Image (cartoon, rainbow, N blue to C red; front, side):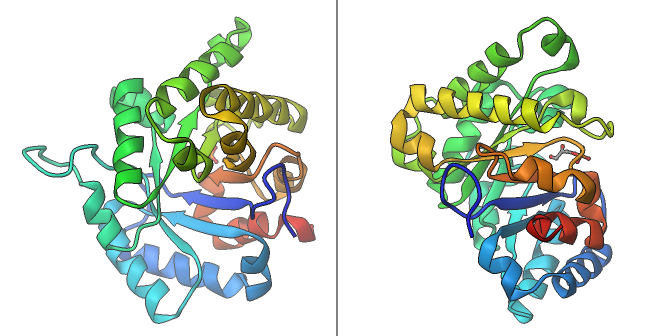
Length: 262
Ligand code: 13P
């Protein structure tokens, strides 16, 4: 069963942000794997995005127990190697079987000064290393109240996808995460989330053409939890969720992935 406009499986991603040491990470991913079954993986893709120090440990658990969860990262640098103290190269993640990397999360843009140009370079570097970017876009509350949400998001989509081939865009994921809904307990209404995700798809159509727009997966993120997952994830232009806080609780996150049952 595929929901949404693309006919592809929805992607439910857990962004752990700066939570969990590698022991806690192992425990969380194991508990999560007990809560999910083959029936779930048949209809949704599930990814977890632990901090860098946990990735090797989580990879080992997924491999050893043959858990069909996708391993993700939260960030990488856009250069292949070099004098970039503290940074991690995309190839290092690919070698750990990381499949998806978040690019341009609003926290990285706001707290660590990532510009549209850096995010675009990162998107290209992730693709060059045979991984899939999750490009994050979204407006602040001030921008929303000023009626600028669509303009902001269109600009971020255009900048993030500049110079990316149509085929690569079609295989990508874009996460619409309104900044005012992140970690606040405030969620966009299903109607607003749908309208903005449709807007993102229209922006992709304009930049990369109809085929890419038809197959790109668009996630909604911002205070998604078990209680609101179904109403958001059944909207036609929402192809998954990027989950922060609720992804740290195995049962809550599993229930989001099982939204079709609730
Ligand atoms: P919350 O689900 O905690 O609001 O976080 C959303 C987010 O930023 C996921 O990347």
